[in-house]
Every structure is written in structure tokens, then in C-alpha cells.
Image 1 (cartoon, one colour):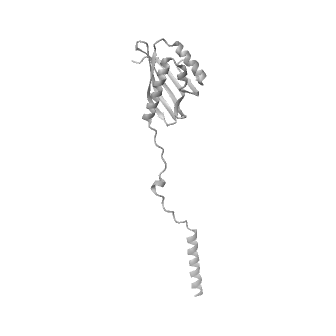
Image 2 (image 1 turned 90 degrees about the horizontal axis):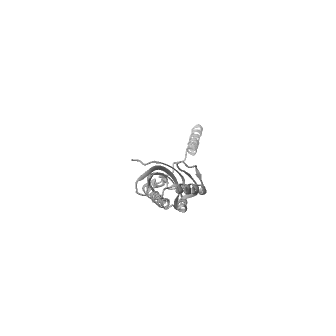
Length: 172
């Protein structure tokens, strides 16, 4: 009987030891709304494209008016601009020099339009792809070109930090 009692105590001790060493019971599963990861809303690229086109329309108005100060307002202080046949312009002072030089060479009555073809990125940094059309005083297309611009949202508005463009003969 002594052995039976010892065996029973050993079994109870072993059972308690097994229960104590086993992993804890899983906690209740979290509610589905707690488990779902937070997903940021996709930017409304159509609205951003419209906003960038409005900037380009204002840019064209300033360009056609020969208003260098208005054009410089579109650029960040640390902007870099690369135009056809021009050296890389780093910063507003260099960009201003390039703009003034280009305007001095422009025939009277010439105008330019900018058309946004595509935008991509996020709400804070947008890359724009577009095309330009230059017309003479009679409205005849004299050249066209392509450009890319990178816009950053600073203080709630987009400002150009990089641009590159090329101009060529009119496309038929």
C-alpha cells in the first residue's frame, strides 16, 4: 500500500509539473477591426493631375508675359533646372539667369502652353510628365517638346524642385 501511495503522489506531482510547464492558454482572439492593419488611402491622382495642370497653366501665363519673378515663385530655393542647350541651373539665381536669357532670345509674340500628360508619386512628391507647344504670333506651331518636373508639397502647396525639358521641331 505504501508503494501504491508513493506511486499516486508521484503521478499527481508529475501531472502538476506537466500542467505548470505547458504553454499558457491562448488569449481570446482580438476583434477583426483590431487585427486589420491600417492602410493609408491612395492619393487621388486625378485631382493631383488637375492641380498640377492648374500650376502649369499659371506657369504658361507667367512665361508668356515674360514675368521672371512669377516664374521663380514656382521653384524651390534649392531647385535644379535642365533645359535644352542650357547648362544645369542650380538654385533660383542660376534659374533666373537662364530664364532671362531665354526670354531675351524669344521672338516677339511667341507663346507656349504646357500640357500635363501623366503624374505619379504620392501626395508629397509628384513626378509630372508633359509636353510643350510653342506658337508664333500668327498661332502657327513652331516647336514642341517634352518635360519632366518633380513637385514637392511644402507648406501645403506644390513647388518645383527639379525640371528637365527639351524642345524640338513642331510635331505634325
